Length: 406
Image (tube, rainbow, N blue to C red; front, side):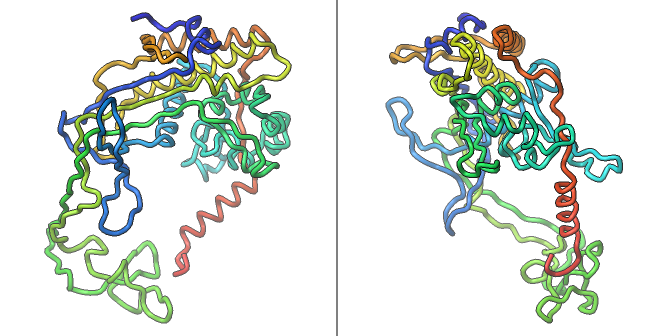
């Protein structure tokens, strides 16, 4: 098996392939047959809470369960790229908003990058922040982002190329719902095969042996006290002292025993294997245009974005697949990339690792820069606008308020 090189990737982006694909087989950390816990979803009473469906896998129908969705996988891929950027292994522009202040009021938020905000560079957090003292949307960079379109993606490539990979809809900008939309080119999900839905048991033994019917607990007027048995100290709601939880039993304040129960709605699953499938659409990248730049420049820019996608595959693999509590999956092989052709022929498989993908990304960025379309190399640091800080401050005051309405 050959290694992926910049030249091979560039040829694929030019038209030699329609997509890049990575398929990784995974097993539960405790081995084949181990139980894992998928994400849960709201369902009608009596049904389990997992996304189970029958899919066609090869020549057979397979009962599958969704272990990690497309949106969740995109977020994990972005965090993997963030790790590569922070470590200095990958160099590409990452705008961010710095919430640190002199008094340390919002130090718990710290820094939010374009790889962490829900709507990427079009997010309201960037919209309501200042770039060199100017509201972002009114700055030169912000106006360029507002005007960016798939037929002229130059601004996004320069300042936030990951948005071209993961997609972006500028629905909170000046144009509202008519804001530019960039198609997601990176699609990934993890699915478990041959699923059997299980059951989960739970209970708690109270060392104090407090009886469940011992007393009624009320919400205390002082939130620091949390609860009280004295009605005179209780929060009053609709003329009555407000009980804790549903019935004020000691179990609502984490005292007393909880009888053993069986949960059939979210009891985990067993699977024969899990498969992570990632597709980077080169067809989608080829629809990106960069106005006033020639064909060679467009190829170089698209190749750089594709290299970011491959980097996301490799670095996410290295960050492990610990999806949630009791859902740690172990890859059964190293990451590989397939070059998928237009004619349905067997795809070409190539090896890739952190060092080679870092080199490919660097070569792609240099090629684009040498042709006149360069990534921003200076730090893109924004500060939250005073009105955003005040909104955040008032929100925290509401959260801490001691009135029943809170």
